[in-house]
Image 1 (spheres, rainbow, N blue to C red):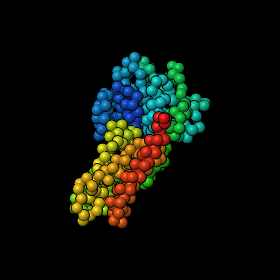
Image 2 (tube, rainbow, N blue to C red; image 1 turned 90 degrees about the vertical axis):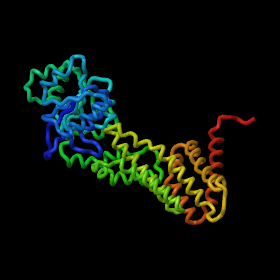
Image 3 (cartoon, helix red, strand yellow; image 1 turned 60 degrees about the vertical axis):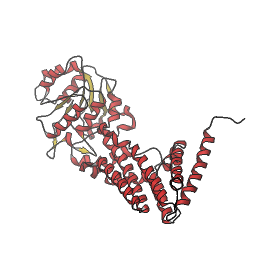
Image 4 (tube, rainbow, N blue to C red; image 1 turned 120 degrees about the vertical axis):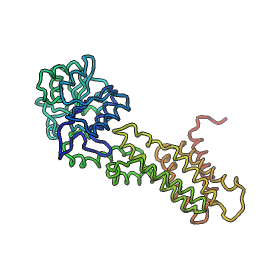
Length: 395
């Protein structure tokens, strides 16, 4: 259950946006992640934004109800149900909220000084509310004793505390709760947006050059792209278009341009993957963009074709002689990426770097030599990795 009531600057708090997510969309994502079968939206009327939430909930297999207040809610909830409720304007990380509410009935709380400063209501001398709870459905009946225009979430929280539902500090969610806040204005939403996006895309492993550039692009342009509604889809389309242009460039003999387009396509792909992390935080249905493994194979085939075309221009060669060294080089790079972990895996698997290096080889008219020498070096490194990781002992 989530509340859409208070407005800020003419816009309900529930539809303030942080990155790809509205507050209500983020709350809906948490509810679906927790396995909720019925979604109840407290709102005075049905709007297009609420209809979009309804479609998303129904596609996930949940029922969706829009009600104006406490009285209709009593008829929707049975004594055997459990109710998960979110305050109007609460923006919380999905995994942190799931960790706190997945297995236990609880009223989430926080230190009173911190909570009051953030706009949450006081519960007692030491604690303030944290805007979320999981309570027994039988408690909803007590809302019938209150005025019809009562604040449903706040009233249900008071009832739950009186009934002995335990308080759980949001700090138990660990470091992931740093964005647990009550958004009250568009300015507040925009203020946390850069840090929110940075948290979603930060990678604990050292970034390859392409990933590093992609991270800078998302940090700088990500909010604008997400608010425009294009997001990762536009970048995926750009990556595919770059690959098609690389095919055309190679067919007409513009091999250097083909390698440049491969590098650009790979950068678009890496940027799309990072931007999709932000999108999937609120809507896991968009997880398709985080894979894109087929695109990696497409770039590899393009690199083999372009390098084969660039080999010994003007000299008649059999297909095997022309393309075999390039095929072995790219295949061995894939083997090396699997054999080495951590930082080296990311660097070896960075097809943007490989494309730029091969572009330099074509510009220096040493494409064929690069393919042969690169394949030999990659084979040597693969043998070294195998010997290092082998558990077999010598005779």
